[in-house]
Length: 126
Image (cartoon, rainbow, N blue to C red):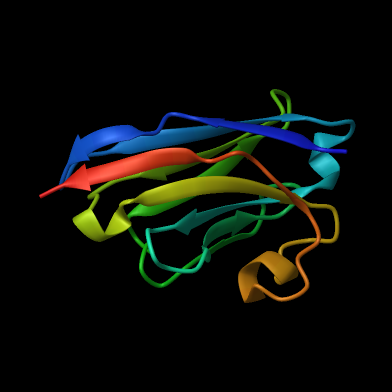
């Protein structure tokens, strides 16, 4: 059982930055690939970024490449999402996810059976 708690969301103006954190309560955090998803009102949940067990591989949705950076600290059982140059279309609830099988299911949005956090709201004003 993986428990995930996100924090760091809030209201920011377009062009600003936010850093989301996700603290995991789980044995062997380093055995889990981690990811961030988001869901805007009226839209389906979408993949944002993923990171491998060791942090050696990272993946991003095209819409956030060059603006968002995912990282992890296995000593602190925490994954981060640094979001720069925020746009109003980035407004959504952001969810942390953990998957012991790797990042593929998260990246493809197929067959994901991992764990979700409760989400944190990010609002970008124009």
